[in-house]
Length: 469
Image 1 (cartoon, one colour):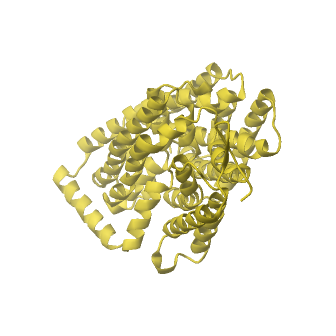
Image 2: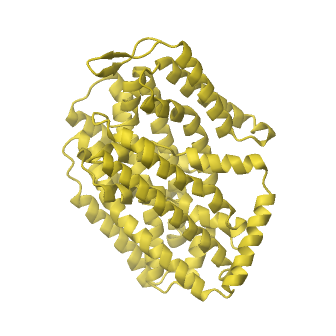
């Protein structure tokens, strides 16, 4: 891709700005600041950080590529994610925000179910975050490769490495500071791009509307009922309280700040998804029909944006990738220290901070290697969703509401849900029934069995301590 000097300057300026922000927010004094920002994050920053994290490559480039071929069908299926975010803000995030002595989901699970559930949650949290980092790193690398024409491996290292260094320097405080700026870029540049695209389209709004209806109808009739349900459920439940989102609830300065942040983010996502889906529709009046779906977002920008502003758009796409990567890397490092290392030893605050920073770099390296084998954006996300929801979700939500929890219920739900979901995927999803649905049903049944036959948590001095089930 041949770039105008103004475009190159815009992209370079973005990376310089990220470096300055990383330097200014690098002073992290203890592990609590690295993990949850001292529990002092106000509602608007919770909202901006959540929105920037949610709007990753899947919910931008990925949705545009799907709407290019499927009309608004994928928007209608993925808007369930926004509904889930609103419900999380109303019911789950406030309860997590009450856990002022917890830094991670693993800490919460330990209070409800004991040490072994804590460890299982930590392993799953770190693994999930590595998967998300890899998927995002691959699309970020592809975008950087289209700009620089460097080898893909070098581009993945550049994007993920830069994100890891930002996270390494300042933890959650640095992550939220940079995400606030990234959110501002995203919220301004992409809607402006849609408006310019609509104005420059060679096809009228009425014709584009007809095209959208045609693509939506064809895509709808080309999918089975189970496929439609599976995608909608995956986006509705696959990211409920995953570590980056749970971390925002735990870091909020109050219960009301947590609730407000999630509700604002849910409303924003409804509008955002409509914008990026519309870009895929408008693209039919701007770029050639043979354009590859994954290239549509950048191709439209190249066709309609003037020099300099196109560079800002490219920087915005990089920001979209990095904002999501920053959150998952920070959460992976915190979960590794608290939920895996912390199970076996109790490091001092200083040692925990050092381990968290070093593990940020180590996890980034693993994610860079995994990115070489990552599938497409949406396929990668759906795979991760089918693992998270059937394992942690049932036990976590039950633990937030049930007073006398049973460790056995958690173990059975997590291990059994994972086994059934993975086994169903290995069997190529018989009858077209999605693995996430089968895994969730199994997880709920096993939790009920464990709750019926397991011994309850014993209460001492207001704290929940696990007993052997």
